[in-house]
Amino acid sequence: MGGPAAAPNANDGHLRITYDEIHVTIGQTAQRIKEQFDPDIMVAIGGGGFFPARVLRTFLKRVSTADGKRRNIPIQAIGLSLYEEVGEADGANGLAMEEKLGKEVIRTQWLDFSTLGNRPLIGRRILIVDEVDDSRTTLGYAVTELKKDIQAQFDKLSAEKKAELPETKLAIFVVHNKLKEKRAEIPEDVSYFSGADIPDVWVDYPWEQEDILLHNAVASQQRAMGQTLEAAASQ
Amino acid sequence: MGGPAAAPNANDGHLRITYDEIHVTIGQTAQRIKEQFDPDIMVAIGGGGFFPARVLRTFLKRVSTADGKRRNIPIQAIGLSLYEEVGEADGANGLAMEEKLGKEVIRTQWLDFSTLGNRPLIGRRILIVDEVDDSRTTLGYAVTELKKDIQAQFDKLSAEKKAELPETKLAIFVVHNKLKEKRAEIPEDVSYFSGADIPDVWVDYPWEQEDILLHNAVASQQRAMGQTLEAAASQ
Image (cartoon, rainbow over all chains, first blue to last red; front, side, top):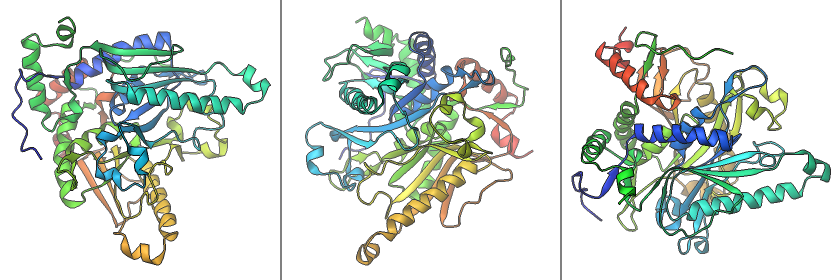
């Protein structure tokens, strides 16, 4: 049940991160992503990937060869949850109980191939976006399932078409990668970008906060006390 | 083409809004939404609706009858663009030219009914979320198309089932509603919540900024000079 949450204090072990800090981290990483991968579509894992994907899009605009204007790259959203995170609001959605057992990943939304056109994934540079790489369970699932879809689409092409299209590339961007044991591996042909590699500390993200001004005030206290991601990482 | 953008100044007619201001606006509106509508699913219009939907979810958690814990309500994403906003990155997606003519709305993603279960929309309280209601073109499209889907799903139910399920309700939440001529009407049975009704001024949102610290600095100057949404609204 749990009563009202305890008043936050700067020494409770939760490292507060502000919107501005995350925005800056995304901007810095965007330069690397642009140089080393240059995606032409993003797949945002909701809800955590929504904010990073929207901000990243600002930094990853591509110059159109048609009119020289800088254009947004498209974002597709997918919804993935671990069973333990899914409450009764999802429980009535008609999923079979077997699909929910254990800590399996539940798809609440997938790519919409009806709108993605006739070669939705093949030949593209696809960047998967999420807030944090924790146990890697959902990211691992996303990569595995996208690879299956790509292979299935590729198999349907003619030999001519297969030779003509550029190689399909997958990459991952997460704002934070927690340095801890992972439950899935990222295949070697998938590029990996993290805004920061961080220790396995409890991070409070701004979009999870009811009182954003208090969150910022405590974050500011923490920085003054030397509590930063960098400091945590070097401990 | 355009060279580098001119250095921003507080009197250039762009009203800068910060993450914190938007977060607070969403939190305040969430109380009204909870009391008057209490949604059990959100439909976020990407990319602008991604941030508001993610923040709003924090304020709209529902207490589970199963274990008393506060749970997130699910978010489905849809992608809608006006043709004028769509660049060549989307141009290769196989859409027919006729679909792009004029200022028609282009679906880049729709609800994923394969994961939404066997009564995906019927009997639910569905909140459509976007950043700003400008010409109302995309919001009008979203409402019309969702209503079509709801009617089609309703028509397939047995008379018994129809009587048993609660009424399906639609509502809209936008962070800002621009007070201007609209190109679409919101039907009377659709509730409408805006964080703020604002004049038709140019608003710069934080997630569109490459330099967030400069954005905040200019926003702060503007507030000191009395440039606020409230002041703009009363002019």
